[in-house]
Image (cartoon, rainbow, N blue to C red; front, side, top):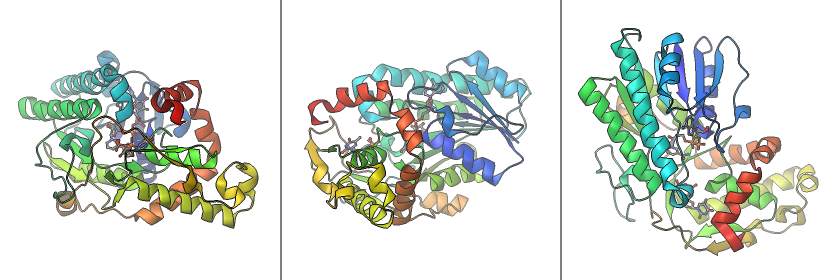
Length: 365
Ligand code: NAD
Ligand code: TYD
């Protein structure tokens, strides 16, 4: 089988490529990625008989049509997006361009491909979306289900909601065989250090302040990225066209608790490996002090959603999906990955990264 993975050089897309190649070594994976600040060619394998990287934009309908036709693609797995809420607050238009127009162009290319008769009979367009389209929960509200009404609150969430609606309409109107997954916050290897967990890890190691928005009690439902990739694979292989599946990790935690756990894990790693103190001499753990002292409460994110939680019962019932990683095991693996892959995260923290950090955090950093 041939897959086209958009956004495959990003965090989840690259993990999905590694996951799929491990599970289906005979398949061929083509990645289409524009290599924005969030995309890294180094997160992916080298080109070979089973892997091809194409540097290009999902809005380039001609290129997408050519890739579908020439390969020929059975599964288009759509990950490409602008994905960071804080950036969407600073520059919303980029989010609309990529997430809405980009998805529209892909849907149109896929529709033309199917209509031409060139697509395999079991062609599937899989759209990767987010729980943020459902809005914010109160402390006692039940977790998001697939039928929860959409109430996006950030420009990012609004753009993803719009893209979800397009995917739904292309199924309903044109019969395009689509599936959609809406997932909670992912974490794990290859996560760009602008999001909570990798940002905190990198900052702990360099003794930089840990910027906590508001009171630190906003709750997210953490999903280890490999569990997410397994959920997407199940939706592609077993999901019914036209259906939506929520994928979650059953790990609701307030942000401050995640930060506390990361600090403890770093202290444990430094205690068991004396070389770490030499590699990261500024880290409080190298000097026997608690990195938690680096926490700084900063001005809250405008419109900051209070709580997300996913009810993944439908995916369990219909696809046999269940997360395999606990938060403790997933965070430990993640901390180890960042300690073992310093060249990867050093390379992505370039000049434009530094510009973003000072424009978002200003004096607090
Ligand atoms: P990411 O920001 O790490 O990666 C996005 C990738 O898309 C990058 O490689 C980037 O270069 C590429 N890209 C951006 N614009 C493009 C364009 N116009 N053409 C081609 N490629 C382009 O994002 P991620 O965290 O890996 O998220 C992947 C998908 O999962 C997104 O659709 C996101 O909305 C969704 N999602 C993410 C999370 C999460 O916790 N990270 C949670 C729920 C849903
Ligand atoms: P983030 O990783 O940006 O994901 P999302 O906004 O999609 O949930 O943020 C996760 C949580 O961490 C969210 O409640 C905002 C909070 N946060 C901070 O407190 N400080 C930070 O510097 C960042 C990036 C996020």
